[in-house]
Length: 410
Image (tube, rainbow, N blue to C red; front, top):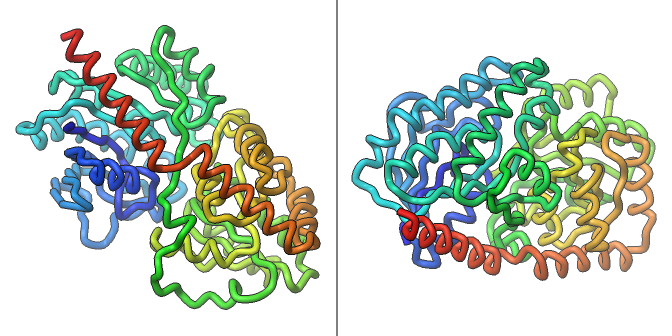
């Protein structure tokens, strides 16, 4: 089976789609990836790439086609808009020429923000006469307003029209959270919508034997580790508030692995408040993260107090469960429900620094055997509900159904 993956983000950027492509290739699929130039989360084009021009690479058995892309910059709504639109324009004008000799059975869109990246995928599906599947990871236009990038109601209404167009012209909509289903259905009447959760590579449960960086703060005491994007959606202020409240507990420390639009703010607050219990070592390669997570006493996931995020399950929840460490979930809705259902950790309300500090203290004072049981519960729940091999096979089944259905209707 020949599959085109359309994703604005891809290796060497750290996203779930990377491992999924590797899994598809291992199962014998012929996989191409249409993507942009890596620039997330720092906002500048990675070394070895250039913003303009096309590039072709081979990676893990897949062929990567990179089209021109304007870097997203930092803390700039205008730069972010140009970043989103440049991928759409390049995808419409350049991708058809770049992929002119390629034929596909199905096109699969990894639907993180911006959902606009599905527009060139739909056009390519029309040209290649194949079905298009969109895996909805973020809800638009809700995520635009929730992160503060767009407040104008007319712009949000216009985005909703575009999203409705995208949903109407796809052959299958997959959603990463069950709570997404009614929200997507409202903009996609009559379309088939299927719950398809995120997973992570098996190395999160069984880390590869590779050299890890020397991070002294991880080696003793009670370490609460946050891993991932440090942005507005994560409401990282809550970590600073909790660390401030727990500053007198010398054995408790917070360690943040990642970068993003709020990282500089966190660094400044650490210095301003004199926090010696909050450490920002920065971003490390994805292959190192399983090993670093295994050193944590607890793993922290946070989201902003917005209705859209109550419906979202951050993919790090599955990674944390696989890692087998207790989870501190400072968020509302679906993500917390999963942690609770798995009996894998403690939940506190989104953006409530005092409640998060209380959860950290509660977990710290818990007997080691009880903390270990929480981690084991999470890992068992992951294996039962989010096993990557099972989910990959399920995705390939979706590919076959859409491909055969599309051919039958042509």
